[in-house]
Length: 395
Image 1 (cartoon, one colour):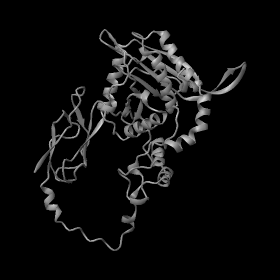
Image 2: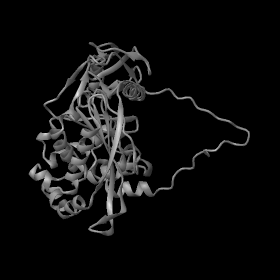
Image 3: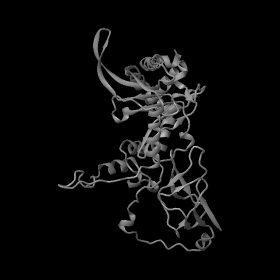
């Protein structure tokens, strides 16, 4: 029986998508739910899988082709599996060669939290790490050993004398969409940015005091982002215009808080949405942020997870940014920018002391948000972070 391999139904906001790289060739045997090709939309990368065991009889759309929802891109012949069911496996050799005994590079095996952290922090590719654990699982020691291997020699970045090399690379759909939305924000919104600085001393002391117990209780590390999410939520409740958006000549006040958390990936910046963030505990916030990061790096975020949002938080500090002016994420009217924590001299009670300080920025649409509201909003976040007990008392 021949089965069509179709593009999944695309949301109304997405008219087409681009096929990336076929993982199988026509004539090759495939398993049910095996990934055949990835599909890049304006927002996410989706996986198209085989509908059944069989042979990939026909590929109708080649790499890089633009396709629409429910369009047939290939055909799988499920009858081909019957001829393979009676094949007797080859006998196992009694002596395994040294080359065959070497563990194979890891492909899609699940990573432990410790390994996942090392992979994320050092921008490693799991498929390049040789796993020596049970079933080829990657251990922490495998990851460290991989990091200690000498880096292969790469061609010099500078051209040879007299050479003027260039390389032209087409933008991905995601990069083009990012460019369009950023330009849209600049062209339509009256964007303005206000700044403040936050003394992180109290939050850092609180985190250091409870981080071990927090991790033991909830199985996840306590970061700074959950404090800023909670602080932003209280500020949004106090100044609802910052959580609003413009629709034509109307201002739409949202009675809910769907916070976007900006995540950087190799394909570009994505903003997954934390729905009803005001109903989440700090442990749930930290867990969701961790899930967003992992899914973003693996290209597993769904379109639903990237749609909507009433306010965004971006943390350039993880890359060392000391100060920036974040660009609005349309149709949202404001975005909070966090930055690097750096010890600086400050005056406390008439004395100069060193304190861990962070600059924070609020970019906002001046068409509906006045400067006073923006400054007070940012001050509310500063007050909550510098005195975390405010978050508990909601004052």
